[in-house]
Image (cartoon, rainbow over all chains, first blue to last red; front, side):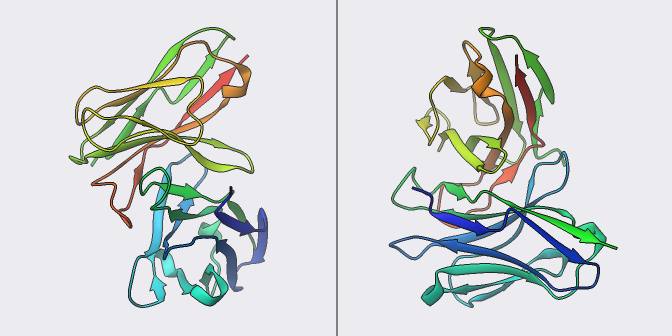
Length: 115
Length: 114
């Protein structure tokens, strides 16, 4: 069963506009949550992660995400999009009860930034 | 810093052929992983190795075998390739398999089976 759902396989924003990429998870235990970015023909790079503590997590390149337990969400935001943000973004969760603590990924969201 | 290195970067196989994808990491990580990436499905775990000398099945292990040759190297073998194995394969490593541990990814191997 899919435990990570990314809403919207493609998101398009104008340069300078707010970026919002949505991620919801299903987990019966407190999850560890990640956002990765994949630039064309590249591997995945960690943007940020939530383990414990502060629910607002800041990452690289001006991105941040907020863990909301009541909504089972971990949406990724950036106040002002830049052309270089065009990439595919993956939300992932560590699942302690299956496959050890391995990462399980959502289907990905392709972000397009229009000039 | 090389990080995680995968070879080859591209490969075309005929149905029924075999091949081995190579992966090496230079970060002294204990744990290594093989994922496949398919459009609309994200990355799915094929096999992993929590530490040198151990390997375990992931979500989609059928049709694959792995070998943890030493701490640095973790190979993925397709014994008889099928068109359904056309995909982009990523190797990753992490210090441990502990919750919240960051995984580092290679640049991928794009495999086409015709």
